[in-house]
Length: 235
Image (cartoon, rainbow, N blue to C red; front, top):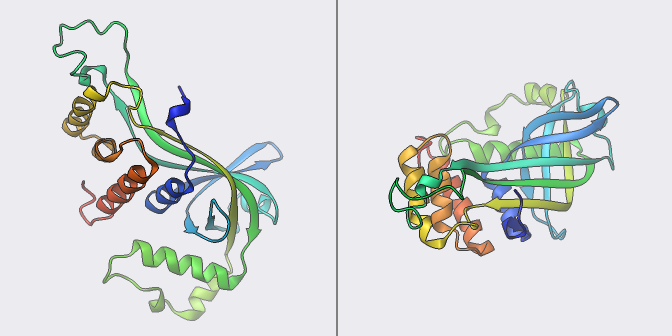
């Protein structure tokens, strides 16, 4: 269920989400319905209030022919998500004998739908986007874009297309147990930490940092994103 108090409208939250969880689902309208592709995004901040995202795809990708200048499309970005058990509401239900008949499991998540119009990038902008992706995701002493043979790099770029989306609007939902009693937050955090499956630890960290303000959510996303980028991949 989507409630108004789960919505985040501050562009800084969207920026933090894209920067720390950049792998996106890209959708466009095809003749037989939606066509879907996946790519990591690069976020750009400019005079546009909401910012810009860039990505590149193989020209042979089925969606690429539909991504022409001024085409409208939707991009979906998902952050951490985790199921939440009522057994973790330890303030309301201190024992397993408590009456939990008026509650049920739910799901926490952070997700954004981004809408905008396409601009097909020129080769120079494509090089910048690829270079920034490499710089962001390679270890400090890892592979550098300068290592690639220029002739090979030029040939590979000829097989991909780069796209820029000026973000016209976004719908960002951050469901982080706001609907639960504040006193139950420690139990929820502890339950996630003990289960420790998939993105449980990331969700626990975000709930612990988030105090209802956009600033705290930006901080939480950057904290979790930094921890997930460590070599161990553990929080």
